[in-house]
Every structure is written in C-alpha cells, then in structure tokens.
Picture 1 (cartoon, helix red, strand yellow):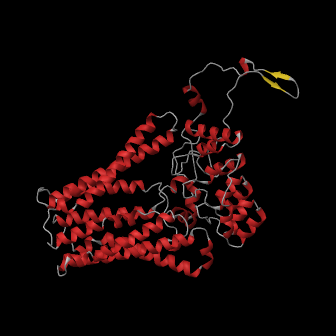
Picture 2 (cartoon, one colour):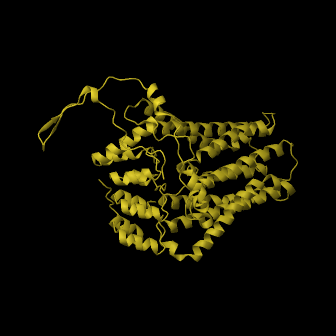
Picture 3 (cartoon, helix red, strand yellow):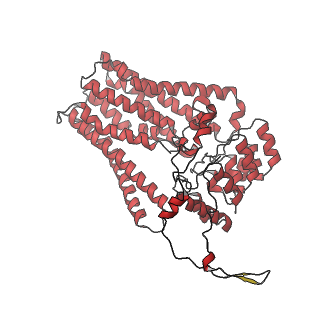
Amino acid sequence: MSYVFINDSLQATVPLLQACIDGDLAHTKRLLESGFDSNTRDCRGRTGLHLAAARGNVEICSLLHKFGADLLATDSQGNTALHMCGHVDTIQFLVSNGLKIDICNHNGATPLVLAKRRGVNKDALHLLEGLEEQEVKGFNRSSHSSLEKMHMAENESKFLIYACLLLFSVLLSLRLDGIIQWSYWAVFAPIWLWKLMVIIGASVGTGVWAHNPQYRAEGETCVEFKAMLIAVGIHLLLLTFEVLVCDRVQRGSHPWLLVFMPLFFVSPVSVAACVWGFRHDRSLELEILCSVNILQFIFIALRLDTIISWPWLVVCVPLWILMSFLCLVVLYYIVWSVLFLRSMDVIAEQRRTHITMAISWMTIVVPLLTFEILLVHKLDGHYNSNYVPVFVPLWVSLVTLMVTTFGQKGGNHWWFGIRKDFCQFLLELFPFLREYGNISYDLHHEDSEVSEELPIHEVPKIPPMFRKKTGVVITQSPGKYFVPPPKLCIDMPD
C-alpha cells in the first residue's frame, strides 16, 4: 500500500516532483540530467525520494540516489523516505543504503509504527518487524561512525548561537568580577562573531539567489529565502542595540532609553514575523523571545535611567510571568512522560522521546529560573557573592540547549547559499567522510561465543501445513528443527 497524495496538483509547479509522483522514470532521468536538483522539496518539505518511496518505485529511488539525493532528508514532520514506504523492494533499497530502521520522526514514530497505521501489506510489515527485531537484538548495532550519526547535528545555526552566548556569559561574569580588565568591546567578541556569521551567510545566500533564478521554482525556496531576510533584519536591529550598549558602558554619555530603542522596534517586527512564520511553519524561537519581552525592555530602560526606582524584583515581573508559563510547560512534559511510562500501548521509542524532552526542559528552565532569581537578588543588594556563581546556572541551561540542537530539525538552507543540510554539504565537499562514515562493524568476535551464552530452549513445534496443489501434509520432525536465519542482516551498508 502506498501513500495517496490528495494535493498532487500542488507538485505540478515542480516537474521533477510531478515525475516522481507519476512514476515516469524516463522523464525523471531527463530532468536530472538537465540539471534539476535531486533534493528539490515541495511545500511540505518532501523530496522526490519521499514521493517515489511512497509510490513504491524503487527504480526512481535508485536513480535519485545516483544523482545525489539525500537519503536522510526529512520533511516538515521529520519523516524520512523510509517512513513513507509500503513496499518490500523499496524498504530493502533504503535500508541497504544506510537508513536506520528505528529512526523516529518529530512525533517519535518509527517506519514500522506508521506502516501499521496505514495498513500496508503483510510482506512489508513482516520485513519491517524483522529488521526492527534485528536492530533490537543487536544485528545492526555497532560501535561506528555512521552516516546517520554524522547527520545528527542538524541545526548548526542554533548550536553556533548558544555557543556564542555561553562564551559571552563567561567573559561577562569575569569582567564584572574584575578578574579580567578587557574592554567591553572585547567582552562582546562572541556576539560580534555571531552577527558577523549572520551577515556573511545572508550576503552569500543573496548572491546565490540573484545569480541562479532557476532555484526560485523549487518548493519552499522562496519561503526559506524570505525567512532568511526576516532573520537578518532582526539580527541587524539586535546588533545596533549591542553596539549602543557597548558605547554606553564605555563612555556613559547617552540615556538608556535611546540604547533600548532598537529593541522597541524589534518587538513589533518580531510580532509580524511570528504571524508570517506560523502561516509557513517556520521556527520562531528568536521572534517569540523578542516579541513577548517588549514590556520587560521598557521597564529595564526606565529603571537604568532612574525614571522609576522600583526594586529589580518588581522590574522583572514580566519575566516572572514568562517563566511561570515555561514552568507549566515543564510540568506538562513531566505529566505526559509519567502517563507514557505507565501506558502499555506506547512503544519504547516514544517513551524515551517524551522522557528525554521532559528532562531537557527541566535542565533548561530550572537553572535559568535560578540564575534570574540570583541575579535579581544580586542587583538588589541581597546577595553578596561574586557574579561567577550567579552565572553558573545560566551556563548549565546554555550547555543543555547546545546538546538539544543535535537531532533537531535543520535550519534555513539558504544561509551561505548551500541549499542543503550543512552535514550533507560537508559530505559532498569532502567525499572521504562519506567513504569512511558508512563503515560499520560488529563487536561480536565469533558466533560460537554468542551461541554459548544463549540459553537452550525447548524445541518449539510447528503445526502441520497443508499444501493445496499437491495435497501433501507437511510436518516437522522434532530432531530436524533448526532456527531460521534472520530475514535481513546488514553488517556493512553501502
């Protein structure tokens, strides 16, 4: 059973995707040879490999793979091509080329789970069950650097941002304690690096966009390019604010309300960006953070200019409201994790996913709230410690955020004009990484050692089978029973 795409007409604007849906091998080959990108996506993030796999067309899948299609590409829901398979030959092709059978989408569902929901044919279900059973038993487990693991750090942009914020917070705490006497322009160096990468990445991406008009007809290309421009605009306003902060701290000449003026402009722009992003299913962490904190920005500016003389505990009331909401999110994940642990209808992978999310949110929100409370008490004069102990909980949250970027949905592909995942770009730039990244080896030395550890079970009896054509009843002799080999064992994927 294959997927039935209700909105197949939406793909008509991209000839390659329409050819994959129609199963037209010859036309697909002509399009690829004429220069069409094999990783072209539709409005839902699906590539031609997704569509061909869903149709069960292994010939087109093989052709796309030959022309550089990314087997690990995921759609907007985190589904790989294997999640959409319903045919034995397509499943075997994808697994034999390195796709893991237990890979999960954003909802924690494996290809087997989705196949059962769709009601695919029994042969495909048995193959998926056998492959997943082999994975659980260790046939495909290995201590290796696989191609999938090299793709795990998908959201490199978030990793860079969190790393820069972590380094900046360390330098700032040391500067506030007087341990280092650097200029604040040097303390802000990680922030300058972050903004420099944004400006260079957007400039290169815009140049690639301008010199390659054919790219504009590829699926979500226009949406991603507009998202990049919106992000650049917000980053430029933030850069203006940071430059004014450094100048104000170094010289102390202009009021803080003027310094915070770029943030006052960022908030309405971020609100508009959030509305646009929700309509196009975009990641909105930075936009939401800037839009919901407008009142907090105003209070801080007024307090620094001594227009109001409230204690910092009162000034940060908008922040406490926001943190209360985040605490409710943590409680939500904890409750659902407990329910999933007690439920017998949930697979182990989904349990692990929800438990991991609950632990991640706790490790982010609780230290962050602790840092804010300590900082407020420090500013109000109720806490006499240095700034370094105050910043330690913030470092814990930032390190956790850096860890959570591994395995997240990838960022905008138009940064630096690479138009693909950063890891995939590196693999194409350095082919030796692909050559050695796919090597897999088993830690078991000899089959005899494994067989000695396995307990001897009672020989199971197989019921007699009647063959209709010959009329012969087939029975099994107890002494001739043998354990059937696994359905498919892949020790060395191509």
